[in-house]
Image (cartoon, rainbow, N blue to C red):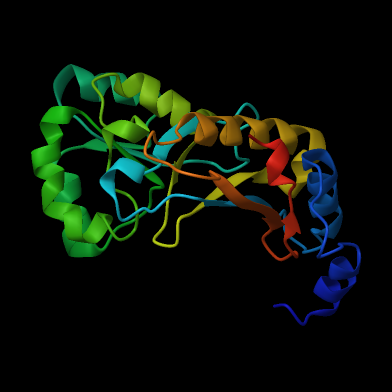
Length: 230
């Protein structure tokens, strides 16, 4: 990927030693997204925490003001009235044990997010080894374990994204498509970073944001001046 002609041309537009202001960085990302498809723009934030410690975990969810540009397919585990509410809210799939069997036996993954009522977590627990590694397990912190399934479905469809630390203390998140333009991407970026800063663990010592890079799917990374982010 990194030796393609378009990538080399794009890389020439970026000063690798420079830390750019958010607006300029996102403008460059849009300029360098030259693939034939509408590239996704991602943010990679390295934090000064140690994810091995429970009191230094950073995880949550936030609704991006301009969405992600992606159609989100929702699977809701619920019964009775809650199942009906999920269907009315536009959930793509609603069920219970039947979908557990479908995932187990058919290796079925035609969904992007799972939402569940708390009483269904015992059922979903059987899928822990399958869903866990894929980052698909519902979680109260992400708002995906809730009695208000209609709200969760609406938020997911509107562009709610989950952020969490990986093992190297980096958060990777999509903030939209290159076609959004720098202004809308900046609004989404600021919303995400605001949520990450707000989620700063009390146990954190020293500098919280260590580095921040934005890049499109096929384009080079652009470093953002993290000192201005808080």
